[in-house]
Length: 277
Image 1 (cartoon, helix red, strand yellow):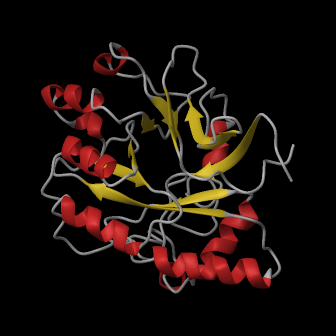
Image 2 (image 1 turned 120 degrees about the vertical axis):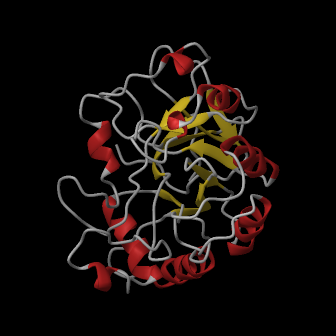
Image 3 (image 1 turned 30 degrees about the vertical axis):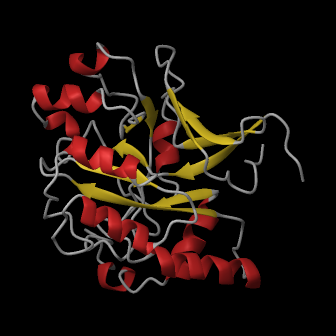
Protein backbone atom coordinates (compact mmCIF):
# COMPACT_ATOMS: atom_id res chain seq x y z
CA UNK A 1 0.00 0.00 0.00
CA UNK A 2 1.26 3.48 -0.86
CA UNK A 3 0.70 6.38 1.52
CA UNK A 4 0.57 9.90 0.15
CA UNK A 5 1.41 12.99 2.12
CA UNK A 6 2.42 12.75 5.78
CA UNK A 7 1.43 9.79 7.92
CA UNK A 8 1.86 9.56 11.68
CA UNK A 9 2.98 6.69 13.89
CA UNK A 10 3.00 6.06 17.62
CA UNK A 11 6.60 5.75 18.80
CA UNK A 12 8.17 5.15 22.18
CA UNK A 13 11.67 6.70 22.16
CA UNK A 14 12.72 5.71 25.69
CA UNK A 15 12.41 2.10 26.88
CA UNK A 16 14.27 -0.47 28.95
CA UNK A 17 14.64 -4.24 28.80
CA UNK A 18 16.01 -6.73 31.34
CA UNK A 19 19.44 -5.66 30.08
CA UNK A 20 18.98 -2.62 32.35
CA UNK A 21 19.76 -3.63 35.90
CA UNK A 22 16.82 -1.62 37.26
CA UNK A 23 14.23 -3.28 35.00
CA UNK A 24 11.21 -4.17 37.13
CA UNK A 25 12.27 -1.78 39.89
CA UNK A 26 9.91 -1.32 42.83
CA UNK A 27 7.79 -4.25 41.68
CA UNK A 28 7.09 -7.35 43.81
CA UNK A 29 7.41 -9.30 40.55
CA UNK A 30 10.85 -7.93 39.77
CA UNK A 31 12.63 -11.28 39.63
CA UNK A 32 9.97 -12.68 37.30
CA UNK A 33 10.12 -9.58 35.13
CA UNK A 34 13.86 -10.00 34.75
CA UNK A 35 13.13 -13.38 33.10
CA UNK A 36 11.18 -11.64 30.32
CA UNK A 37 12.13 -12.95 26.88
CA UNK A 38 12.77 -10.70 23.86
CA UNK A 39 9.59 -12.03 22.22
CA UNK A 40 7.46 -11.28 25.29
CA UNK A 41 8.96 -7.79 25.51
CA UNK A 42 8.11 -7.06 21.88
CA UNK A 43 4.58 -8.45 22.21
CA UNK A 44 3.98 -6.11 25.17
CA UNK A 45 4.69 -3.11 22.96
CA UNK A 46 2.65 -4.54 20.10
CA UNK A 47 -0.27 -5.00 22.49
CA UNK A 48 -0.03 -1.40 23.68
CA UNK A 49 -0.57 -0.03 20.18
CA UNK A 50 2.97 1.30 19.82
CA UNK A 51 4.11 1.07 16.20
CA UNK A 52 7.82 1.78 16.59
CA UNK A 53 10.04 1.47 19.63
CA UNK A 54 13.55 2.67 20.48
CA UNK A 55 15.54 0.35 22.77
CA UNK A 56 17.49 2.55 25.20
CA UNK A 57 18.96 0.42 27.96
CA UNK A 58 21.32 2.01 30.45
CA UNK A 59 24.80 1.98 28.91
CA UNK A 60 24.13 -1.28 27.09
CA UNK A 61 23.14 -2.63 23.69
CA UNK A 62 23.17 -6.28 24.77
CA UNK A 63 19.52 -6.89 23.97
CA UNK A 64 19.47 -5.26 20.54
CA UNK A 65 20.58 -8.26 18.48
CA UNK A 66 18.31 -10.72 20.38
CA UNK A 67 15.36 -8.33 19.92
CA UNK A 68 16.01 -8.01 16.21
CA UNK A 69 16.14 -11.81 15.87
CA UNK A 70 12.94 -12.18 17.92
CA UNK A 71 11.16 -9.59 15.76
CA UNK A 72 12.08 -11.53 12.61
CA UNK A 73 10.64 -14.70 14.16
CA UNK A 74 7.46 -12.97 15.33
CA UNK A 75 6.94 -11.41 11.91
CA UNK A 76 7.31 -14.83 10.35
CA UNK A 77 5.12 -16.78 12.79
CA UNK A 78 2.55 -14.05 13.58
CA UNK A 79 1.40 -15.40 16.97
CA UNK A 80 -1.62 -14.06 18.85
CA UNK A 81 -1.02 -10.44 19.76
CA UNK A 82 1.30 -9.78 16.83
CA UNK A 83 1.14 -6.49 14.98
CA UNK A 84 3.77 -4.79 12.80
CA UNK A 85 6.46 -3.04 14.82
CA UNK A 86 9.60 -1.16 13.81
CA UNK A 87 12.60 -1.47 16.12
CA UNK A 88 15.14 1.33 16.47
CA UNK A 89 18.36 0.38 18.31
CA UNK A 90 19.55 2.91 20.85
CA UNK A 91 21.06 3.43 24.28
CA UNK A 92 20.77 5.73 27.31
CA UNK A 93 24.25 6.98 28.20
CA UNK A 94 25.19 8.39 31.59
CA UNK A 95 27.51 11.36 30.99
CA UNK A 96 30.12 12.40 33.53
CA UNK A 97 27.82 15.03 35.04
CA UNK A 98 25.21 12.36 35.73
CA UNK A 99 23.03 13.64 32.88
CA UNK A 100 21.40 10.99 30.71
CA UNK A 101 21.53 11.24 26.92
CA UNK A 102 19.50 9.04 24.58
CA UNK A 103 20.93 7.85 21.28
CA UNK A 104 18.62 6.69 18.48
CA UNK A 105 19.97 4.74 15.51
CA UNK A 106 18.72 3.38 12.21
CA UNK A 107 17.00 -0.04 12.38
CA UNK A 108 20.03 -1.67 10.75
CA UNK A 109 22.24 -0.78 13.74
CA UNK A 110 23.34 -3.65 15.98
CA UNK A 111 24.70 -4.42 19.43
CA UNK A 112 28.15 -3.74 17.96
CA UNK A 113 27.03 -0.20 17.02
CA UNK A 114 26.20 0.55 20.66
CA UNK A 115 29.37 -1.12 21.91
CA UNK A 116 31.43 1.12 19.63
CA UNK A 117 29.62 4.23 20.87
CA UNK A 118 30.13 3.26 24.51
CA UNK A 119 33.82 2.82 23.75
CA UNK A 120 33.96 6.25 22.09
CA UNK A 121 32.55 7.95 25.21
CA UNK A 122 34.86 5.91 27.47
CA UNK A 123 32.16 4.12 29.41
CA UNK A 124 33.90 1.59 31.67
CA UNK A 125 31.09 0.64 34.05
CA UNK A 126 28.90 -2.44 34.13
CA UNK A 127 26.65 -2.75 31.10
CA UNK A 128 23.04 -2.08 32.03
CA UNK A 129 23.84 0.05 35.08
CA UNK A 130 23.32 3.81 35.31
CA UNK A 131 25.37 4.15 38.49
CA UNK A 132 28.70 4.65 36.68
CA UNK A 133 29.21 7.56 34.29
CA UNK A 134 31.15 7.66 31.06
CA UNK A 135 34.37 9.64 31.06
CA UNK A 136 32.78 12.21 28.78
CA UNK A 137 30.73 15.37 29.24
CA UNK A 138 27.16 15.59 27.89
CA UNK A 139 28.33 17.65 24.91
CA UNK A 140 31.02 15.08 24.08
CA UNK A 141 28.41 12.32 24.33
CA UNK A 142 26.10 14.27 22.00
CA UNK A 143 28.90 14.80 19.48
CA UNK A 144 29.93 11.13 19.57
CA UNK A 145 26.34 10.04 18.95
CA UNK A 146 26.17 12.32 15.92
CA UNK A 147 29.54 11.06 14.66
CA UNK A 148 28.25 7.49 14.94
CA UNK A 149 25.23 8.34 12.78
CA UNK A 150 22.66 8.57 15.56
CA UNK A 151 20.22 11.16 16.90
CA UNK A 152 20.97 12.54 20.39
CA UNK A 153 18.11 13.42 22.75
CA UNK A 154 18.65 14.91 26.21
CA UNK A 155 16.64 12.63 28.49
CA UNK A 156 13.99 13.65 31.06
CA UNK A 157 15.13 17.26 31.28
CA UNK A 158 12.44 18.20 33.77
CA UNK A 159 13.45 15.48 36.24
CA UNK A 160 15.19 16.29 39.51
CA UNK A 161 18.00 13.81 38.82
CA UNK A 162 20.04 12.74 35.79
CA UNK A 163 18.99 15.79 33.79
CA UNK A 164 21.32 17.98 31.75
CA UNK A 165 19.46 20.98 33.23
CA UNK A 166 21.06 20.26 36.60
CA UNK A 167 24.51 21.06 35.15
CA UNK A 168 26.15 24.46 35.46
CA UNK A 169 25.00 27.21 33.11
CA UNK A 170 28.43 27.60 31.53
CA UNK A 171 28.21 23.93 30.53
CA UNK A 172 24.51 23.83 29.66
CA UNK A 173 24.63 26.75 27.23
CA UNK A 174 27.16 25.17 24.82
CA UNK A 175 25.29 21.86 25.11
CA UNK A 176 21.98 23.42 24.02
CA UNK A 177 23.82 25.15 21.17
CA UNK A 178 25.45 21.94 19.93
CA UNK A 179 24.99 21.39 16.21
CA UNK A 180 23.02 18.21 15.66
CA UNK A 181 21.09 18.42 18.93
CA UNK A 182 17.46 18.94 17.97
CA UNK A 183 15.35 17.26 20.66
CA UNK A 184 14.78 16.98 24.39
CA UNK A 185 12.60 14.62 26.40
CA UNK A 186 10.13 16.21 28.81
CA UNK A 187 8.35 13.89 31.26
CA UNK A 188 5.65 16.23 32.59
CA UNK A 189 4.88 18.50 29.65
CA UNK A 190 1.72 19.95 31.14
CA UNK A 191 3.55 21.42 34.14
CA UNK A 192 7.10 22.06 32.91
CA UNK A 193 8.33 25.64 32.70
CA UNK A 194 11.52 25.89 30.62
CA UNK A 195 14.34 27.71 32.43
CA UNK A 196 15.56 31.05 31.15
CA UNK A 197 18.75 29.61 29.62
CA UNK A 198 16.52 27.45 27.42
CA UNK A 199 13.89 30.08 26.62
CA UNK A 200 16.49 32.52 25.31
CA UNK A 201 17.52 30.05 22.59
CA UNK A 202 15.68 28.68 19.57
CA UNK A 203 13.57 25.90 21.12
CA UNK A 204 14.27 22.25 20.47
CA UNK A 205 11.71 19.62 19.54
CA UNK A 206 10.04 18.11 22.62
CA UNK A 207 9.47 14.36 22.73
CA UNK A 208 8.15 12.03 25.39
CA UNK A 209 8.94 8.36 25.93
CA UNK A 210 7.55 5.95 28.49
CA UNK A 211 10.95 5.22 30.10
CA UNK A 212 9.29 1.86 30.72
CA UNK A 213 10.85 -0.52 33.24
CA UNK A 214 7.82 -2.84 33.38
CA UNK A 215 5.64 -4.70 30.90
CA UNK A 216 2.40 -3.50 32.48
CA UNK A 217 1.32 -1.39 35.41
CA UNK A 218 -1.00 1.13 36.97
CA UNK A 219 -0.93 4.77 37.95
CA UNK A 220 2.57 6.09 38.52
CA UNK A 221 4.29 3.18 36.81
CA UNK A 222 6.05 3.20 33.47
CA UNK A 223 5.20 0.54 30.92
CA UNK A 224 4.58 0.27 27.16
CA UNK A 225 2.23 3.06 26.14
CA UNK A 226 2.13 4.80 29.53
CA UNK A 227 3.58 7.98 28.02
CA UNK A 228 0.40 8.36 25.97
CA UNK A 229 -1.43 9.19 29.22
CA UNK A 230 0.92 12.09 29.89
CA UNK A 231 0.38 13.38 26.39
CA UNK A 232 -3.40 13.30 26.72
CA UNK A 233 -3.51 15.08 30.08
CA UNK A 234 -4.03 18.55 28.65
CA UNK A 235 -0.62 18.89 27.07
CA UNK A 236 -0.06 20.24 23.57
CA UNK A 237 3.31 18.52 23.25
CA UNK A 238 3.61 15.41 21.18
CA UNK A 239 4.34 12.02 22.73
CA UNK A 240 7.13 10.72 20.58
CA UNK A 241 5.20 10.65 17.34
CA UNK A 242 7.09 10.37 14.08
CA UNK A 243 5.85 11.13 10.62
CA UNK A 244 7.01 10.19 7.18
CA UNK A 245 7.14 12.83 4.51
CA UNK A 246 6.58 10.82 1.34
CA UNK A 247 8.34 13.40 -0.84
CA UNK A 248 11.41 13.95 1.34
CA UNK A 249 11.43 10.31 2.52
CA UNK A 250 12.64 11.26 5.95
CA UNK A 251 11.51 10.54 9.47
CA UNK A 252 10.56 13.68 11.35
CA UNK A 253 9.13 14.77 14.67
CA UNK A 254 8.48 18.24 16.02
CA UNK A 255 7.00 20.03 18.96
CA UNK A 256 3.45 21.26 18.55
CA UNK A 257 4.06 24.27 20.79
CA UNK A 258 3.43 27.49 18.85
CA UNK A 259 6.87 28.90 19.77
CA UNK A 260 8.80 25.80 18.74
CA UNK A 261 10.35 26.46 15.33
CA UNK A 262 12.80 23.57 15.10
CA UNK A 263 12.27 19.98 14.02
CA UNK A 264 14.63 17.11 13.54
CA UNK A 265 14.78 14.67 10.67
CA UNK A 266 16.94 11.82 9.54
CA UNK A 267 17.07 9.26 6.77
CA UNK A 268 15.77 6.35 8.83
CA UNK A 269 13.08 4.17 7.26
CA UNK A 270 9.64 5.02 8.58
CA UNK A 271 7.50 2.43 10.38
CA UNK A 272 5.55 0.13 8.10
CA UNK A 273 1.97 0.97 9.08
CA UNK A 274 0.17 4.25 9.81
CA UNK A 275 -1.74 5.00 12.97
CA UNK A 276 -5.31 3.75 12.81
CA UNK A 277 -7.69 6.67 12.81
